Structure formats: structure tokens, C-alpha cells
Image (cartoon, rainbow, N blue to C red; front, side):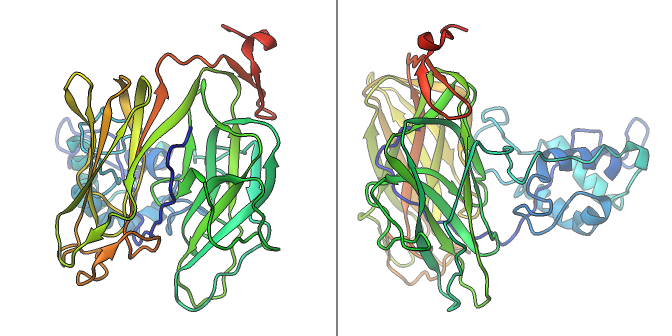
Length: 438
């Protein structure tokens, strides 16, 4: 992921964690030609597929949804969340099939889960229960190639204020290192609002516990952990280069607390493997000092524009704001005068932020202007607004605001022809390895 103008984000904790989904079966109450939905045959397989990544011991959700006894008390809440299309969380506009990894339910699926709950949420025949799902390790993507952690456990302050800390991870990358995936594993999920990992200058040094004052200068974002974003993994053949002579820095926002808690968050890197042809880049479009949202303003809008420096193939987009964030729109103004909407997030939700991956990539010629349109709601009608009487400016705290739009792309026609050793992440020309055109 080649970075351009990257700046840190801030995130908030999620208060409600529910992930509900069902398979497309015939909903009904036993009428002729319709099979009643049961937990063992119809619900459990989809909980395994869609929900248990989060809803299992040691993961991000507060309740496990592995067994019937664990799921049954939440049945009515699941029905309500599904019926209102709040769960599974997905906030971009577009029909089913427009995005990859789209968890939204069809009308038939919603009817099915409603029917299952309305009939008393029956358990069903134990013989229909699928084998329990297993995970290869505590890491969602499996065991990383390299794990880096905070140098020492950190104890957040107990004064009921947000605690922002910056840590230097003590490893210098002595050679260019190519990775295709990153995963952040919080050491204490209850203590952390968010965690961001950056590329920083090798000469930066932290204190005995790794902390550094004043943040990271000239940093480049690698990944942010927040509910809705767990990890990043590129398809085979694509990778991101960690430049020689850099380190990783970790910025963590600890939640206000009066309890004695400790944290030692880790980041796992997954080295690329084999032939790499594409490097992932992004075009950042955001505002910093321009944000000034008047008290009570329900539709404060800013527009930023950036120009693609080369022919590109756009694959996904992401937008970040804070609690007053209302909506995003990403538009492309082509050199021939055409205007196309790349994507929209009409109901931005600070608690569920994700990257939206397009099922069909978009070819963008050099000189195309990307337009980033962000709207905020600072009125009393915004249920997440901490204080509608305040003038809101840009800042790192959750009660401040930010504007960060990202359009991820590859350079059109690029063929790196690099062969990467999966054990080290180091690359050589594929021809030197005898692997070109394999």
C-alpha cells in the first residue's frame, strides 16, 4: 500500500455487538411445502460463517454465539436488529453483489430469521448440528510471519480521561520487506478504543516502555484496528512494501477507566509469497484545519479534490469521521468530462467503520479528479452527538472531528515481476529466481 498524505484516525468503542445472519431457506410455520427453521439445521451453519469470528471466546464481541444455549437468550434482539437492517453492519449504498464481503441479508433471509424467532426459536435435531468451527490460532488470519508487540505491558491512567499513547516498536527493517497482510491484536479489548500502526523513521526512539511524546512525524498509516476493521489481506500477486530503514509505530487510544488494567497490543505481519505483480496504493482526500462545524448545524459539508497521478485501477474505498459524521460520497471527474459516483456511505456509523471493496474494479485514467464529499450532523437530532452547542474543529479526540477519505488503487499495467521469499518478505526479480511467468 503506497501511502499519500496519510494522517491518523481516532475511533470510538462499540456499545452493542450483535452479528446475525441466516441462510436462504423457506420461512414458515410448518405449512405444506415449507420447512420450519431450526437452530441446528438452519441457524447454526450461518452463525459459524458470519458471526462466530467475532462472537467467540477471546474475540471482540462480549457474548459467544457458538451453541444453542448461548444464542437462545439473544434471539429476539437478533430478530430486531436484522429486521431493521442494522445487523450485519454495512453502510455503503449499492445492491447486493456490488461489493465483496457484503454481509447484508436478502428479504428472504430476513423473513427466515423472523419466522424462526416467531416460532419460539426451536432447537431442532442434534443430528443436524454441523461440527464446531475451529480457528488455526488466536489470529484471525492464522499465525503471522512476524509478530511485534509493545516493548512492555502498559497500564492506562485511572483518571476517567481518554489516554492517547504512541509506542515505538523496536525493530528496524534492514531490507525492503513485502507483505500482503496485517492484523492488529489488542492486548486488552476492553481497554482500547482504537489502535493504529504506522511506518515511522528508523531514528525515532521510545522510552523504556516504548512510549514517545508528541506523536509520529512524517508517518504513513499501515492499518487501524476499530470495530468493523480487524485485518487487511491482499489477494495473491499483490503486496505492499515496507521500505528499508523504517520502523513500526503504534498509536493507541485507551478508554477512560478507574480500574487497574494492562495492555500489550501486538501487530502481526504476513509476508508475501511468490510472484508479485501489483503494489497497492491509495489517494488520500481529507481536511485538517478547515473543519469548523457551527453549533446545531445538521448538514455541514466539506469537499476535497485530488488528482490521480497515473492511470489506475480502483478496487476499494474508505471514509473516516468521528461522532458527528453523517455521510460520505466519492465521485470521479474524468478528463473527458464524465462524472461517476465511485461509492457512497449515506448513513455513516462511527462505531462500524470498514473498507468497502468493489466486486468490479474501476479503471481511472491519469488526470482524473477524485472528489471527496463529507457531511456532518452537529444537531441535537444526532443521537451520538456529545454536545450540539459546541463549535467543532479538527482534532484527535473523539469529541473533535476528522475527515479522511481513501481511494485504494493499483497502477494500471504495472508488472513488478518480483519473487518474494515467504520466510523473509524479501524480493528479487522473478527472472533471477527462475520464476518469471510461472
